[in-house]
Length: 278
Image (tube, rainbow, N blue to C red; front, side, top):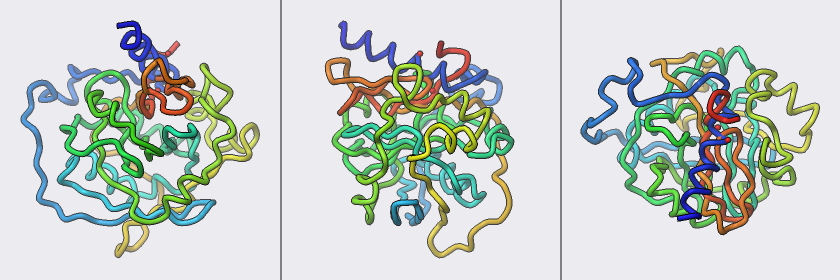
C-alpha cells in the first residue's frame, strides 16, 4: 500500500511541475466523449520514423493498431517538424529516455492545450518500446514521449500505451547522455517549467551535455517546413510514470518521479498547477 501511495505521489509531482497551467481533466469540454468512449481501432498501415540525433540515427516502427490516437498524434507532430532540435531532457539510466518539449517556447505554447484521449494498452512497455508521457489524469497525452531502456511493464497498468518500437539504433538510445539524472524538483536535471518558458536557451546554458533529436522525419515522406502547429486543443502535461517506490526513484520531470534505475514510469509531465509533484 505504501509503495502504491509513493508511486501515485511521484506521478502527481511531475505533473504539477511540468504543466505550468496545464492540468487536463477528462471532463474538459474539448473531450466530451472521453469518459466511456469505446476503444478506437485503426486499419492504418505501419510506418517508420527516423530520428536523427546528436548520437546517431534511431529508426522507429510505428504501429497504429497498438495505439491509434498515439500513432496519429506522433505522425502529425513529426510532419509538422515539432521534434526538430528537441532535447532528451530526462534520461534515467535503466529506466527511460524522455523527449518532447519544443525548444522554441512560442511553438510549444501552441500545443500546450492540445491533449489526446487515452488508447487501450495493447503492447507492453518493454525495452525499445515507445510511449507518450502522461500525467496521472485521464486523456493527458500531448507531445512528450519516452523510449524504454528496460522492461517497464509496470507502466502498462498505469495507461502508458506503446505506439512504436525501436527497430534500429537501440545502441544510440543507450548512449544518450544521462548524467543529469532526474529533473527538478526531485533531481538535478532540467526543470520542465523553465524549459517550457525559456526553451533550448535554458538547456544550452545549464545542461550543455544533453543530446537532441536534430530532425525527425517519416520515412518516405518529404520533411515538413515551418513550425509545428497545434490541432485539437487540450491540456498537455505529460510524464512517464515512475516505477515502484522500492526501486530507486529519481523524481519525474515536472510531474512524476521515476526511480533511479527502473523507476516507476517514464514520468508523464503534469505541470505548473499540480506539481508543486509533468
